[in-house]
Length: 135
Image (cartoon, rainbow, N blue to C red; front, side, top):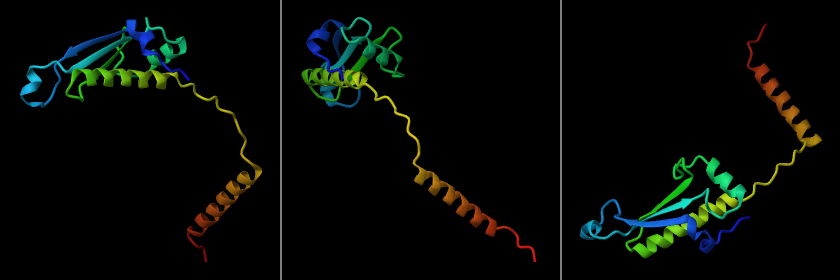
Protein backbone atom coordinates (compact mmCIF):
# COMPACT_ATOMS: atom_id res chain seq x y z
CA UNK A 1 0.00 0.00 0.00
CA UNK A 2 1.24 3.48 -0.88
CA UNK A 3 1.42 6.19 1.80
CA UNK A 4 2.18 9.67 0.43
CA UNK A 5 4.71 12.06 1.97
CA UNK A 6 3.31 15.58 1.50
CA UNK A 7 6.75 17.23 1.91
CA UNK A 8 8.03 15.33 -1.13
CA UNK A 9 4.86 16.10 -3.09
CA UNK A 10 4.87 19.85 -2.34
CA UNK A 11 6.36 20.89 -5.74
CA UNK A 12 3.32 19.31 -7.45
CA UNK A 13 0.83 20.99 -5.07
CA UNK A 14 -0.48 24.49 -5.72
CA UNK A 15 -2.71 26.15 -3.11
CA UNK A 16 -4.77 29.26 -3.74
CA UNK A 17 -7.24 31.07 -1.51
CA UNK A 18 -10.63 32.21 -2.74
CA UNK A 19 -13.96 33.34 -1.37
CA UNK A 20 -16.20 30.57 -0.14
CA UNK A 21 -19.59 29.99 -1.72
CA UNK A 22 -22.92 29.90 0.03
CA UNK A 23 -24.36 31.57 3.08
CA UNK A 24 -21.99 32.93 5.68
CA UNK A 25 -23.15 36.29 6.87
CA UNK A 26 -21.20 39.53 6.59
CA UNK A 27 -17.82 37.82 6.73
CA UNK A 28 -18.25 35.75 3.54
CA UNK A 29 -17.81 38.64 1.11
CA UNK A 30 -14.65 40.00 2.76
CA UNK A 31 -12.49 36.99 3.62
CA UNK A 32 -10.93 34.47 1.24
CA UNK A 33 -11.21 31.40 3.43
CA UNK A 34 -11.82 28.67 0.83
CA UNK A 35 -8.81 26.76 -0.52
CA UNK A 36 -8.37 25.51 -4.07
CA UNK A 37 -5.73 22.75 -4.12
CA UNK A 38 -4.33 21.81 -7.53
CA UNK A 39 -2.25 18.62 -7.68
CA UNK A 40 -0.34 17.86 -10.90
CA UNK A 41 -0.51 14.07 -11.14
CA UNK A 42 1.81 13.71 -14.14
CA UNK A 43 4.68 15.70 -12.58
CA UNK A 44 4.30 14.40 -9.02
CA UNK A 45 6.86 12.07 -7.46
CA UNK A 46 4.43 9.22 -6.85
CA UNK A 47 4.69 5.61 -8.09
CA UNK A 48 3.71 5.03 -11.70
CA UNK A 49 0.88 2.61 -10.86
CA UNK A 50 -0.73 5.26 -8.62
CA UNK A 51 -0.49 7.83 -11.44
CA UNK A 52 -2.10 5.41 -13.90
CA UNK A 53 -4.89 4.53 -11.49
CA UNK A 54 -5.66 8.21 -10.83
CA UNK A 55 -5.54 9.20 -14.50
CA UNK A 56 -7.71 6.28 -15.59
CA UNK A 57 -10.28 6.92 -12.84
CA UNK A 58 -13.58 8.43 -13.92
CA UNK A 59 -13.35 11.32 -11.44
CA UNK A 60 -14.77 14.75 -12.23
CA UNK A 61 -12.11 16.37 -10.03
CA UNK A 62 -9.35 15.36 -12.47
CA UNK A 63 -8.93 17.58 -15.54
CA UNK A 64 -7.87 16.39 -19.00
CA UNK A 65 -4.39 17.82 -18.33
CA UNK A 66 -4.02 15.44 -15.37
CA UNK A 67 -4.57 17.96 -12.58
CA UNK A 68 -6.54 16.92 -9.52
CA UNK A 69 -8.56 19.80 -8.03
CA UNK A 70 -9.70 19.66 -4.41
CA UNK A 71 -11.86 22.51 -3.12
CA UNK A 72 -12.13 22.93 0.66
CA UNK A 73 -14.57 25.42 2.11
CA UNK A 74 -16.17 23.63 5.07
CA UNK A 75 -14.37 25.58 7.78
CA UNK A 76 -14.36 29.27 8.67
CA UNK A 77 -10.59 29.72 8.66
CA UNK A 78 -8.21 29.45 5.74
CA UNK A 79 -5.74 27.36 7.75
CA UNK A 80 -8.34 24.72 8.64
CA UNK A 81 -9.51 24.57 5.01
CA UNK A 82 -5.89 24.14 3.88
CA UNK A 83 -5.46 21.28 6.33
CA UNK A 84 -8.76 19.73 5.16
CA UNK A 85 -7.70 19.94 1.50
CA UNK A 86 -4.33 18.29 2.22
CA UNK A 87 -6.03 15.52 4.23
CA UNK A 88 -8.46 14.85 1.40
CA UNK A 89 -5.58 14.74 -1.10
CA UNK A 90 -3.81 12.22 1.13
CA UNK A 91 -6.99 10.08 1.31
CA UNK A 92 -7.32 10.12 -2.48
CA UNK A 93 -3.68 9.08 -2.95
CA UNK A 94 -3.87 6.33 -0.32
CA UNK A 95 -7.06 4.96 -1.93
CA UNK A 96 -5.41 4.97 -5.36
CA UNK A 97 -2.33 3.26 -3.92
CA UNK A 98 -4.23 0.24 -2.63
CA UNK A 99 -3.39 -2.86 -4.62
CA UNK A 100 -6.32 -5.04 -5.53
CA UNK A 101 -6.03 -8.69 -4.58
CA UNK A 102 -5.97 -11.03 -7.54
CA UNK A 103 -8.97 -13.33 -7.68
CA UNK A 104 -8.36 -17.04 -7.23
CA UNK A 105 -10.73 -19.19 -9.25
CA UNK A 106 -12.58 -21.77 -7.14
CA UNK A 107 -14.86 -24.66 -7.94
CA UNK A 108 -18.21 -25.16 -6.23
CA UNK A 109 -18.20 -28.07 -3.78
CA UNK A 110 -19.92 -31.32 -4.69
CA UNK A 111 -22.39 -30.76 -1.85
CA UNK A 112 -23.34 -27.27 -3.08
CA UNK A 113 -23.81 -28.62 -6.60
CA UNK A 114 -26.11 -31.36 -5.29
CA UNK A 115 -28.12 -28.85 -3.21
CA UNK A 116 -28.51 -26.60 -6.25
CA UNK A 117 -29.85 -29.43 -8.40
CA UNK A 118 -32.19 -30.55 -5.59
CA UNK A 119 -33.60 -27.00 -5.32
CA UNK A 120 -34.17 -26.90 -9.07
CA UNK A 121 -35.96 -30.26 -9.02
CA UNK A 122 -38.16 -29.16 -6.09
CA UNK A 123 -38.98 -25.88 -7.86
CA UNK A 124 -39.89 -27.81 -11.01
CA UNK A 125 -42.22 -30.11 -9.06
CA UNK A 126 -43.92 -27.11 -7.44
CA UNK A 127 -44.49 -25.54 -10.86
CA UNK A 128 -45.80 -28.84 -12.25
CA UNK A 129 -48.48 -28.83 -9.55
CA UNK A 130 -49.67 -25.42 -10.79
CA UNK A 131 -50.52 -26.74 -14.25
CA UNK A 132 -54.03 -27.52 -15.43
CA UNK A 133 -55.31 -30.86 -14.24
CA UNK A 134 -56.58 -33.34 -16.85
CA UNK A 135 -59.38 -35.67 -15.61
